[in-house]
Length: 242
Image 1 (cartoon, rainbow, N blue to C red):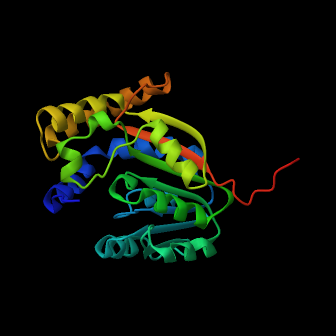
Image 2 (cartoon, one colour; image 1 turned 180 degrees about the horizontal axis):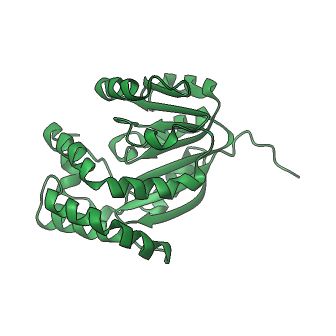
């Protein structure tokens, strides 16, 4: 897929403007996180800072620069490990020796062309009964110029994600859409205005609205959102009662 490295870097930098959104995502996945966690696509370690008190954190990324930065920040913690790895590679299963009970990934799988192989490999490193947590961009109808410019192969809905999980041998437990207002902004910027990256002014404004949006979405099941949260379980190898 053709995409713009400049646009992708701009999005990474502008992500720092929406720290309240990252906190919102963490609060959504926190109830499902276990004690021995692996993050696929750890980047610069934005979410690793929430997991310093876990028994084990393993962060993987395909970017040497990102891994080097995260190692500089967290390398002194004996329970924090960061390494270069590709979730679609045949050697990814070697990470099962960490005895991982939770794999999570935030806004990464849309960048992976062969997401079925990635899901299967994620299952292989999970202990039986372990949990997979994914946050991905939601809704095909939102796919536009901003998705293309930063290398998104797709966006997902609940049915598409559940089907892929089933193909990978995972059992879908729960799904919900997050950040309905953000999806409207993405629609306007990526489908109507055809921009490559979100405007910084909008990001600043939206970041200030997040506390209000969190309270609103806690009270109802949103029918759409900019992101889809999915929680699945590795039932393969789990003894079943007769």
